[in-house]
Image 1 (tube, rainbow, N blue to C red):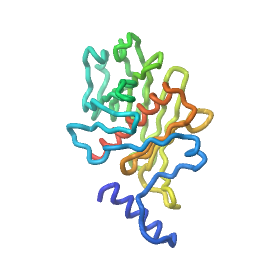
Image 2 (image 1 turned 90 degrees about the horizontal axis):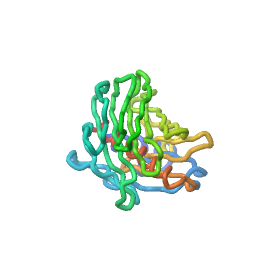
Image 3 (image 1 turned 120 degrees about the vertical axis):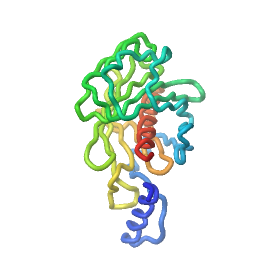
Length: 245
């Protein structure tokens, strides 16, 4: 049974034992007070993606030029990849109202101690960071308006498919944690229903990976922060897609 089918069945069972009639589409639980402080961006065209075109959107954002494999080209300018070993790599471009605001490269099941890139993504800067032994996903994000490229590292934790991670953009740090809660149900699912993005002062974004998916971004974020977190949300959607292939 597909993930969508399992969730639909699970949610029906939950409603049945809760004394409620019928079934409805499963949703990730997000506290109402958090929802009220965020803007919602429903995802379009993510389910049923064809391997030749994995583009999708959550307007005003659109994920385009998805490529499964490292792009070592003049455009990206990635050097020093000799230390890299991974099971699957992918890259993509994020657009906002047709303007490119993010360029991202990721490696999954990463097995390298140190990632080094010179002339990173054509910016003329360099980036080096140390990855833990259990890093499952490592990404470089070039976001318009950020002084330097951002790094994202995510490690497996707990139940199947769940990961925790850290997004670093200079001094700005965002922690990413999975959630297993379903809206309207006391039952937690065995796989992540979504991910929560937090800074020290609280939640700044959330991603639902069920069904088509949804993205929430805090009202008070700057446009650069929004573009950065939208790029990170897109990383998770594409990684989740890879797990379903």
